[in-house]
Picture 1 (cartoon, one colour):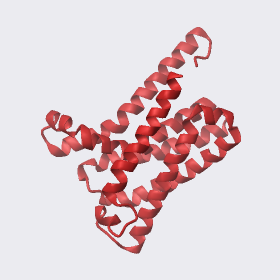
Picture 2 (spheres, helix red, strand yellow):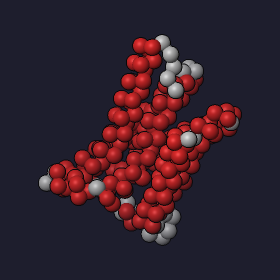
Picture 3 (cartoon, one colour):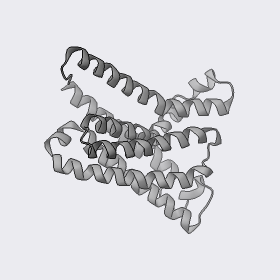
Length: 211
């Protein structure tokens, strides 16, 4: 019961931040949509629109992929939405590679390229492992990919509520931006992989699967 409540709270908070913080800030798909990227060409508008639509699909299908009650009960539906999640992730990643060279945060650029590349790597590995019928590794790669995808929402949470902390630790503003940017995706990735490694060791020690 506690696990179900935690999952529900997470998704409510995640989409709440997406709706309240991102959409008003960047005025998605309005006439001023590309102010943040410094261009209003047809190509850039198309790339930006592709990125936003693909990103929304990624986040919406993630709910279906990572909610156990849906995933375990509707296997066929889970597989179809999984394919949609992977395809929309690839579209989102491709558009990001076009957009990132003009990011408004130059100091954050190394982190943004790394997390985008990791997202791509995890998606490829998730597809590979499901083809090999290695379900556990597939699940871990999918979760890892979502951590990278969620960065583009969760970084706004840090910007809004935690930048004072990073600015107090790092006196140089550029360093503070870079550190906060890396923190958003690296810490949850490390925590999840540490948890999985510990669980694997326990399973190996006791010769049983830990749920």
